[in-house]
Image (cartoon, rainbow, N blue to C red; front, side, top):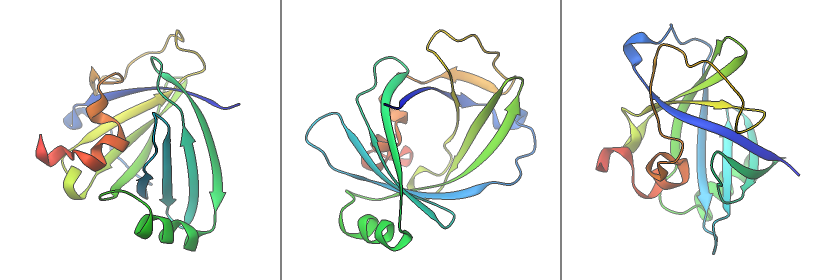
Length: 154
């Protein structure tokens, strides 16, 4: 069973190191009847179907499977609710962790967040100087919610 333990933060883009080697992500969400999230994601030319459980603190169940690119495109067009998320992800190393910095586009343009995956909820880690605010528990910043209530509407 896969468990994702992830913290999410807002950042001061003026303090970020230069971002290089980013990759594009296009993702959408298939509606479910409960707190389960079903995500379809295209990362460059690779496609994935991800099922995530309800968040409890910074943890939740996560299962991810590669799928054919054409299937992902068909799912995004036919099954995903509302709009899709478009962003570029950059990997930034800081001490013992790799931080994922997401620069959003489209209706979420202007939003830049950083995520870090941890081994446990109580794992100690050092925040980079460019981190400003922990938004792990703020559901507005969940990608699945940004589809329904994009950053440009706030």
